[in-house]
Length: 448
Image 1 (cartoon, rainbow, N blue to C red):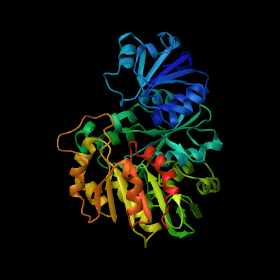
Image 2 (spheres, rainbow, N blue to C red; image 1 turned 180 degrees about the vertical axis):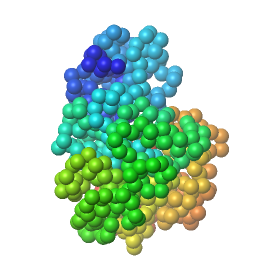
Image 3 (cartoon, one colour; image 1 turned 120 degrees about the vertical axis):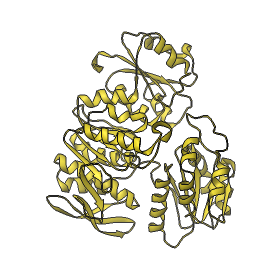
Image 4 (cartoon, rainbow, N blue to C red; image 1 turned 90 degrees about the vertical axis):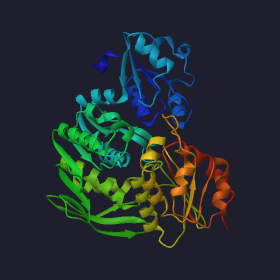
């Protein structure tokens, strides 16, 4: 598709983190942009403030007339949108050009030098780090989170270089045209789509086969590529890690040089792996090592990725998007490394009934590592309930003396009653908005 011939772009699910980045991109490139989303959020408010039309009632009458001209309008939707959505059905039944978000990213990457970041964990952090490294080189980066350096999920450059999150969900990443790519992990996930872990792994192999210039693979993944690892022999390796004033200091061994005294602030060895993946891709592309070092040092992180929302002598509140057992385990490791003598409270909102069912034992094992566990109701997203699969069922599997169900109304009192100084709130649903509403309450209810 020649996007230059399209003048109006309408997004169904415009408030999604990936969809809103595309909406901003086209708006800044002079297209007329509008769309629908179910719920008003900070993201939709930002879009509206920039002049993008957004409404929240699924009604054909709400679609502005300028987006009802099929010859000049492209409709973009996310797979999270229900098939019963009236607006989507209107466009599909009336012959409009209708494409998934991933297909549009595919069209963009066909005409740019594409860095694609794949993996069941770490995509957003790696792409945000890489986007920051490549910003002086005019890359346009589409991010799955809000970069704290740019206060946006879009880093706008030119159309010659792009940084894209290669999403495995619905095999979306197979629409991309990657030049340089990485695969950070292939842990089982999205089994409601793939059925079996082997099918998921096969899709990653198909993605790997599309890479034209260089593929970087986290050590241990059974896909051929340039390996990277932390303190383990690999083509790119982080070595001699120490912690100084809450920052990691380390060396990076590359196939051609040793880069010493690299500084990076995000906690957790999983974030060292994320930083190394971004370093390796930029290094192969030709960015000087010293420039990459400076970018790693100045990288501030991504919202809801080990984000400190309160950090005082009496209370530390960390907000993170973790919604998979492996991610929860990584968060615990990071917290334990940074605060080895403290007690930890985790407040977890399970995401999807199918994921909760598929990984219940693994969730229980990773959550049991915390001293105090509170579970919110499952966030259903696109799914209908599954009989017998609920948060009480998950809670019963957790091996902890201090565990209970909770609700948003009880979060402040739960935190006050807990003996834990470190509070970690995890999940991919609306728990992030709960944190926003909770923080002002806790500022007035700090522990003495």
